[in-house]
Amino acid sequence: MKGDSPGQRHGTPASRAAGAEVRRLAGSPAVQRIAGRVRDAARQTATRIPRADVTVRLRSADLRGVRTSDVLVDGVEARAARRTARSLGLSRTLDDTSAWAALGALAALMRVADDGRRRAVVLDASGPRSLFSRWATRAGFAPVHLDVTRPDVVGTSIDAGTVDLFARIHPRSLRADEADVDLVIGSTALRRGGLMVVTLRLGPAAEGGVGVAELRALVARADEQGLSLVGELGVADGLRLRAAQRVEGDTSVGLALLTFRRR
Image 1 (cartoon, rainbow, N blue to C red):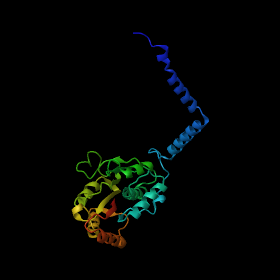
Image 2 (image 1 turned 60 degrees about the vertical axis):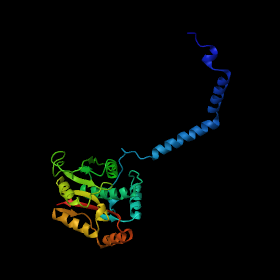
Image 3 (image 1 turned 180 degrees about the vertical axis):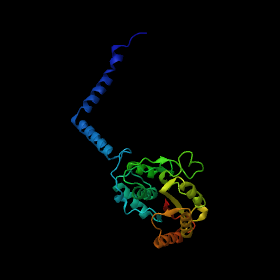
Image 4 (image 1 turned 90 degrees about the vertical axis):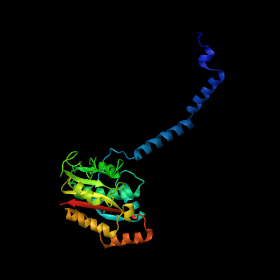
């Protein structure tokens, strides 16, 4: 085979001229200034993106005003929870409802379950992309994804009476018709004084939800099983829920966040 000709090796006069023009433009002061601005913008953006492995300096007092048992029936409170989380340096999210539930669970973890040394044993069954796990990790904990409400998990995957906090919250809330059994089974994993944080859908039973009466009955039955509610669901919460039910009718109206402590 014959070798390439000099013209083929080095390109045609037109291609050589085009290459020279590209090199001239790339070296011009104007293009260099633009490139510099692009690099600076990229560096500034990178510094603003939260890193998952960065621990935030979070104190229990920072979550003093966050309720550990509550009802959510409008978007205003959920959006406020998301803004609070951002002000504390927690990971960003676009899901207001998940932010509300995760912030309540984090408040229970930091104010009640943990002794300040970040040694609490935390299990989370809220889903593979749990916002609570992300925020707990940012706060210095090491949550494990394990659902102790499933039969045969306690005693095989984890010892009974060893967990400081177990969470199963939105988007993987308890179903109303399964909540009693889930609470009893899950509580066997808790140490004395350990917490179980759950959410339930508020609304008609046909959609797996509960109303005011059903919610209070569930809390009473849990108390009979040695699980005390942390916080309070008062008259005002019941009135808010009933008002939302009148407006929404036979559809889901929100979430209930319940934190129980094992006696």
